[in-house]
Image (cartoon, rainbow over all chains, first blue to last red; front, side):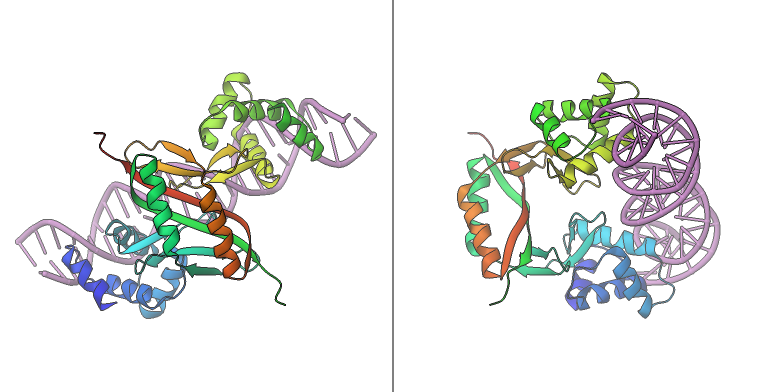
Length: 135
Length: 135
DNA sequence: GTAGCTGCAAACTCTTTGCAACTCT
DNA sequence: AGAGTTGCAAAGAGTTTGCAGCTAC
């Protein structure tokens, strides 16, 4: 989280109270909060913060690539701090989002892009599934 | 396209003039049109069609799984007829969408979901890339 | 001091919906 | 005939923006 602050300052952003709060909220979130979620969590720490600032800040963080913006086919965006690279499996029954990584997949994606004549800049894989019966 | 009409009728939908037009437009589209795109193309064939009907029809087709709804991180939805299963590579410089299939990828996804204890229902993979210099 | 940031409210974009009229079956 | 469908316009959700005042640097 302190790292997030530093990276913002390095990028030339002014470290205002509101931004500090939003970064703290993001750093503490272990899920994939919507803008509204971030707003509510930030409000607990600073009553006066406005949702416009949350939108603006998340937009900036996304540009700086400090945060990843997701659209899980829900009609609104969700964010997460850009730490390790991973993908998501969405539980269709509960909406729960499970993270996973897979080295084989990473290599395969690079290869597919290269074969198509492209340099891979970004990508996203989302799986949507139902829990298998436990037995 | 005739197949699309049949599948709608089988599903219990009334085959109105507007729906016939929208299905025709979808059947003829080789890209991934937005709602607005479908609306404009449909209007050429039937001046009187409204965008509300396009939204409603695409929603129904999506429910019936005759169409796939995409959100390529653009803030609006794009649709395509659900024919063969494939994925997309988005050219970040031109916005062009390239389709591809990869058997190895299909298997890997099934495996990942299974290993996480899930039955894979749906999934989406999008690659974002820049064209490699030709040489 | 000043460029950048903020809250507020209004505006914007995409999508959905209530309703009265209409149309497939 | 009647349930389903339509166009219209209004409403809704999510997001962006103009502006005057404020604040980090």
